[in-house]
Length: 465
Image 1 (cartoon, rainbow, N blue to C red):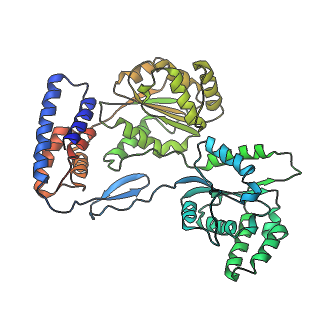
Image 2 (image 1 turned 180 degrees about the horizontal axis):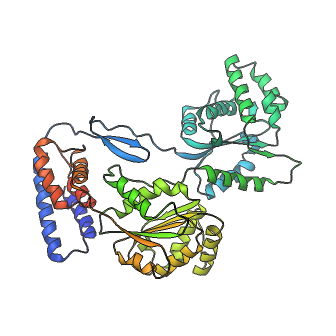
Image 3 (image 1 turned 180 degrees about the vertical axis):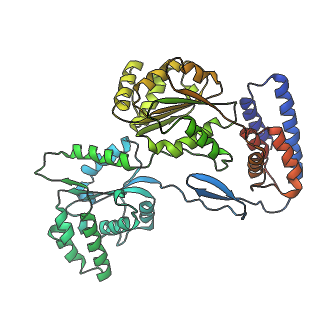
């Protein structure tokens, strides 16, 4: 308990750093008293801890008060891309280079282990990887159909796909017509399989080969001038354009967030074609970063390129910040910046190539980036947006000197109802406090004054039986 209180006190001091010492001391004293009171009242309870069901709807999280069991939330796919291929044909050449290019582009790619012992059927673990992948790249080579494992993979992938854009076939020096009509090496392989496998399984394989042959994809031929390197580059660009954008982690207790996000949308005039900047401002702990993340998750897909830079104040110079922005926009693991000017030129090449951009700079604590922000905004094409979060509301005003269309959104404190829900969620794991604790909970809500961080900390006292 002492450790928990100490961690909460450290967060409180950070959140209220701009208060006077007298007010800070009074607030901490009252906070400790309230912590002690609620811990004493909760400790005697021997009832099982109740949990609230979390329901996801259109990226918005709400509380279902009709149940006390924590609902299982469907996890996001673990893999951006699943690679299916015949190892002996392509593992040491084409697949090796393709996997490296996807990895360098920041695409999380599943590639089965070369040492994997493959039996008669694909493993449950591999089926799970297929089901937890967003997209599939199938490299169909001459001996692909000779492997029952590859054919089972193909059947599983086609049964899991939800749109045709999820599957990208690469016909690696094979004719799609041979797949469609089961001729050539594919016909020979199927004839051999008929001696070992059931009629039903053979039928599924033939149907899958016919279906994949009908999809548009990439076709490597000896007669074409396109090199394997060029094709790999095109495949990576194709995957990047179709893959879901990065989703930022958010807590499930987003009370009062939806309305604020829509207010930010309106204040940014998202329908207009000009370049705009917005400062999301307010005191520490009021939820600036949460709102910026929620807006990014909901609207970043409407931009051609986007990035969310957290803890910007940790970058004391423009060079490191520009380097991180370029890494995010290029979706690479590493990118070296020689100097600010060369980084600006590289950034210009990205932003000026008819790409509408969204850049979010979280937690600015000074005006040292005002000039840099203005330079970045001058590189934008129409429709692009910059969002900054800061405690100091003067930062957006300083940016107005350098550019037009700059506005400020002051984050509002939570209303009393949302405050009570947030406090209760952390104190009792349910959206409403038990009747016997209602009066005490309301006193906590009054004390916190609608500040989300304070409500979370006040409600986070562990209930130890």
